[in-house]
Image (cartoon, rainbow, N blue to C red):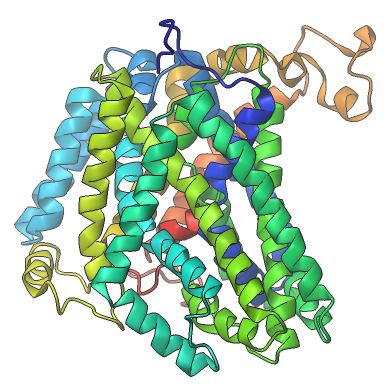
Length: 558
């Protein structure tokens, strides 16, 4: 991205970058998914496991992505193209393996999956590791198309709440109202359009004037709204039951499946694998500290997820409602909760405004990934790229708005499209939004993160990555880990040029061995090929069914 003087734009400060990147990570999933899965899987015990998973998978991969961006000053495709070797035996072997797999799929009449695999294999063989960057751009494109539809629902509920137009006297009436709202193409497409216009209006202004300036406004607003809702919730009678539901450690509920859920959410919630952190990292200056920035982003993302639970569950328990999972809690239960509270219209409006802000900060990062690619690689102007692909993403989102949920509309408006997809891929499909969600969150994101960690750890090399991280963060690579923890980082006698345990050496081990294995396990669990709940026997490999709820990539913003 070039500024008017011809130089690439940079964040004006480290705080601006942290707020923008944290805004990318904080999304709808932080508000509705993390609180529930934490309470369902042991509360405080799950939170502890989640923090460990963040340390072994989330933070190491985030360091990789931001480092790739700052080193190359390019978008995901440009970053991988710049650093990848001209010829890679690993990439060639991987491409050949995918092509052979495609031939097998076609032989077994799985033509849709075979065609996709064949195209991917040929692309990997021809373009090598650059394909990994392309997967990030495609993921951002696909996710925003349906994410904008769900975000549009929050925008619509802000308007409806403010004017008292939501019939939420009971969960049943709130459910009927939501079904009528989300199933109304006029409302759904209009709100989707307005949300995309908001994203375009911010991204088109550039990094400093657009993304950073609005992140400095939206992130403090989000935190303030959370604090207000938390205070209101915990001051309600029996609100403490909600706090216990979220934070009380119950290790009896902590199972192997709980650990896998924590592992998957730790990856998805930080916006990894979709190119957002590579793109945002490309706007960093060399003197900015990658390691402390990554810590701050991770901390803010986790803090906001826990704060969201403290804002939601005290009110739910105080009013005598049972918590429901995913979108049901947000659009079906909470409106009924707020209707029982004094000044319920105010609290409902503030809550859905909170959701919309979280969605907007993620939405602008997804649009920036696509915009950055066309500006950097295709030499388009920012205005042209943002307007054209903002419009294309809006058009792609219309089928999602027309087929938002299997229980609302399903495929009744597009049966021809369902027939095509079923014949090509032979899988159960709930709705078109499910198709887009599954493609992005179950496949593109985890595979993108897996290949990024392999590329940095084994192809580009951890030594070169650490040399880049060292600029602005010498303590990361040059100070003994125990000296750093002991507060002796400035004592020359505790620094050494010989091989010692530093943060860098620990990170190198994790990114080469631990993180790839953890991402692979999370990936296999997400697509349904690994299920320890089934007496340790995983089902035979087959294309996974589409998800039944809007949980996947929405929860990554993830």
